Length: 69
Image (cartoon, rainbow, N blue to C red; front, side, top):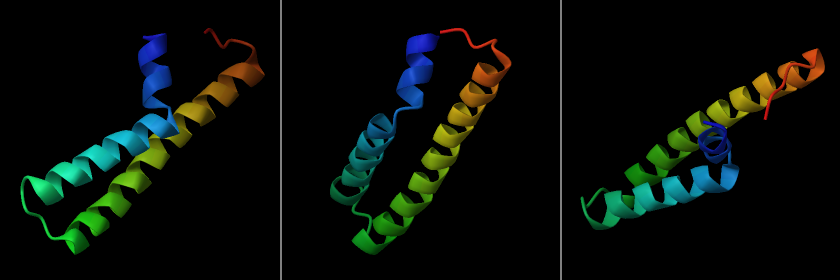
């Protein structure tokens, strides 16, 4: 679970997934680039919120001294 959590909390991984999804939407499904751009912005906001929540949880656990790797 630790490696999976690290992967999910990685900003690089999130941006790579977003880039692949946008590429698929535009090239395969023919979504207009404007719509893809709007969708990208929303997905980035959600990804940053998830990454932030993992980070906040890690900080709280580290301060309490109960963080386990």
